[in-house]
Image 1 (tube, rainbow, N blue to C red):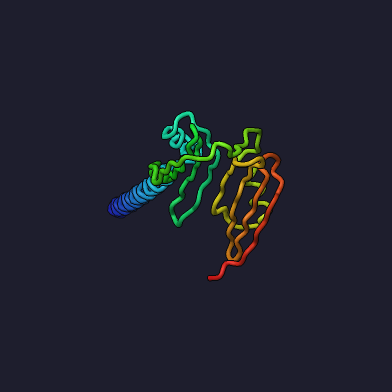
Image 2 (cartoon, rainbow, N blue to C red; image 1 turned 30 degrees about the vertical axis):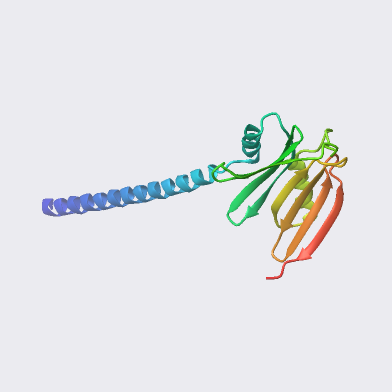
Length: 186
């Protein structure tokens, strides 16, 4: 009887060791997978946002007036595009969303009689929501604010599987002032 009890104890111990080893292996595997997720998430969170891009542009041309701002998705790269006016000059600045680096900077003298809108406008988020709602479905591929002239506008391009919709809004009140819909030929 004692011999059978001893054998049973050995089997239980081996089974306990096997279960504990399996549990440790699972924990290590989950930990590695979790680290991979953390690394990929941290890479994505390293992208700069619109507000950071505006700050980078403002640092490049201090005390200027941002009259145009938007972005374009070019494959995996999102490029923020801005136009700043200061002392009779127009500065075109593009910022890489991954690095925060200025990848294009142009300066040119402008005609001082050009009108620049200085009144209240709806927020970019409100404008984006109006554009996406009107387009129906798809992803916002590009978005831009243009503060020149007496009517400031937001422009957005929404792309779905086979359709491209470009929408212009009056930035003062969000009313749609233009829509262009086209098919995408693949």
